[in-house]
Each structure stands twice: as structure tokens, then as C-alpha cells.
Length: 226
Image 1 (spheres, one colour):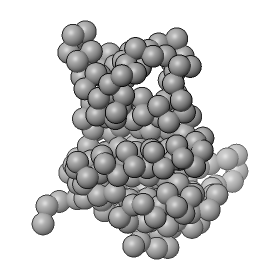
Image 2 (cartoon, rainbow, N blue to C red; image 1 turned 180 degrees about the vertical axis):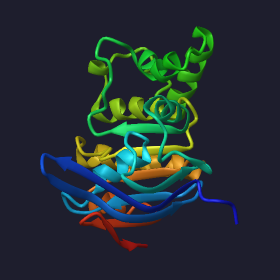
Image 3 (cartoon, rainbow, N blue to C red; image 1 turned 30 degrees about the vertical axis):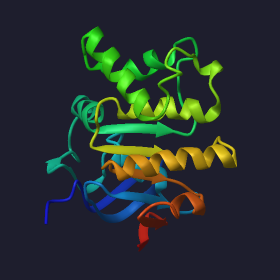
């Protein structure tokens, strides 16, 4: 069997607030293999957001280890973490975070601009990513000219444009109505079927039910994995 794409061992995350300590994560062991589609759930304050930040290399553990593709990332500095984020992780957020005065292609190009890709190459890759999410006919539209579902599709294309190892989606349907939620979940299903590794952080049971595996957190610990 191949090595896990993600491996967390004994991960704790403690925040210091004045004289107090908040134990956001209290000993997380987790393995994720390439091609998995899983949800991270739990009540408010369970540690979902903290775990997402760690998985996305936006934060590091106070204790324990995190390996991504066999590379130890738990003790890297900010510049090294930023390099891994740009190369290995695609983020999708509830609020889209699109530039309002910029068309869809230019929004999708942003990670490639930061990576220093040449203009022609990044434009071609952005167009391919938009085609992949079904927006071949909306490439020149600005966010205000798109529906909520189309804006989230642009955000997903932006997350995919660097061919990341992991697509990390934080409440990706939180701002969408029922019909549009179904549209976006259908797209995530298609991406998973094409081989993408997808981790969805959600408090919605119907979203978690679409995935292959659900990790439930409570009080900073994994209480269910199935």
C-alpha cells in the first residue's frame, strides 16, 4: 500500500490568551490517502477550523507531526509553508474571495501570477481550469455578472489551476441556496471521480453525506471516523 498523502500524528494546537490556554486540538491522529473524498464535521468550537488551518499549512502544530507527501511540514517557517500552499493545496471558501473588477480568467490566474508563470502559459491554464468546471462560456464575465454557483465555480477553478495535491473546501456551499448547493456538490463529486483528493470542512450533514468518509471532531479530538 502506498504511503498516505497526509499523516498527522499526536497533533496538538494550543493558543495562549493572556494567562489562559485554549487547547483547540488535543491529540489528532489522521491519515488521508490520495484520491480520498472526506468531510470534517463537528459542533462549533470542536476544532474544525484549526484542523483546516493546519492541513492547509496556514498554521503549525504546538506538538506532534504533520507530513504531506512524506515531507515534514510541522516545523517549517512561514516562507516554506507559503511555498507548499502554493504548490500543493487549493483552497475553496464560503465567500468566494473573487476580485470584483476582474473577469473570471484573470481571477483564476492569480495563483499562477504569484508563482511567476509566463502570461501565455497562465492564461491557457486558467482557461482549461474554467472549462473543467463548466464555465467555458463565462470566462470574460466579472463576478457581478455571474450567479452564486458560477462564482463558486470560478473559485474552484482558481483552486485547481495549480494542479494541487489537495482541494481543501471550507463550507463551500454555506452562501448558496439548495439548488445551487446541489450543483456545487455535483461538481465536487465529478472532481473526485476524476481523481482529486478533496477535504470538505462542513457543519451540514447533507454535505458530509456526499463524501466517502466523515471525520467527526469534538473538543479537539477525533470521536468518529467512518
